[in-house]
Amino acid sequence: MIRFEKVSKQYQEGTTAIKSLNMVIKEGEFFVIIGPSGCGKTTLLKMINRLIELSDGTIFVYDKKISEYDIHELRWNMGYVLQQIALFPHMTIEENIAIVPELRKWDDQKIRLRIDELMEMVGLPPAKYRGRKPKELSGGQQQRIGVIRALAADPDILLMDEPFSALDPISREKLQDDIIDLQRRINKTIVFVTHDMQEAIKLGDRICIMNDGEIVQVGTPKEIIESPINDFVRDFVGMHAVSAKEDVQLENIIDQIRTSHTTSSPSFTIPASSFLREALMMLTEHEQLSVEKEGQIIGTITRKTALKYMADSLQERGPNNG
Ligand code: ADP
Image: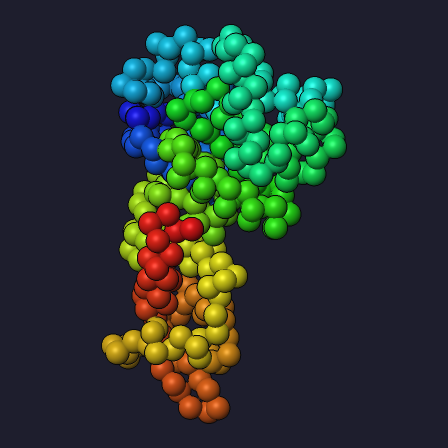
């Protein structure tokens, strides 16, 4: 659906933001791009809707080069959501959502019905909220309007650039759940940029890990956790992947993460009351850890057994990892 062929981007000052990148994003997929700050995520996303020009290579959407589309046609078919949603402050919620449908000359009745449908979908009753101004809504509610505004004219593709990162943890979790639910119902192709591994694991059908303008690994959350391709991915995942819900004490899961193959390399000792997250941090430096409870070693764990435990618990959460 979206195909990158040898795409690169040099900014004028000489920064190479993207280096000859090849990638395919499939129709209907929730595709998450993640990596450290400055690795090129935003540049990559903005090249898709031509907010940033390519220096070299080609991007295809539906097998047609993006340079061959009429720019309005291209952008109308791609909703775009940013970290700080800029709703127009003097316009009502309804008017904000109607912008693109009006540009596309939908008739009034169709726009009205679409607004009702979308507002219901994210739990903001239209009768109550459609006439309000943005400042009469909370930050989380405004962001929700930003998301449905991007969906208003029914685009096939949704581009999202850290859309939830400015929100408090509760609104953030709620919106993540909303977007998973939306994706199941409307089946859009979503390209989602984040720097938060937990968010990537929760949302992504596939995750693309970038570093320094290049793709390091693309795979399902399970593949990335279970088979990280190199130290960069392993460290990135190990440090960031354990969400609060899964961050259990080692003594509760030792039967599941104990290895039967201890090696002769020196083993560092960790208390059984430690949390999985702490163990994973230590496992970026030590090959294996002996888990100690009341003076006894109750098992030895390795990075592999700990990551396998996480991958299996993801599997149990179902195909969308929700
Ligand atoms: P990310 O979204 O992963 O943080 P960006 O795509 O924003 O990364 O940036 C990638 C690289 O390109 C960085 O080194 C950044 O400083 C540089 N860069 C981004 N935008 C510009 C610009 N308009 N002009 C020059 N360099 C830029």
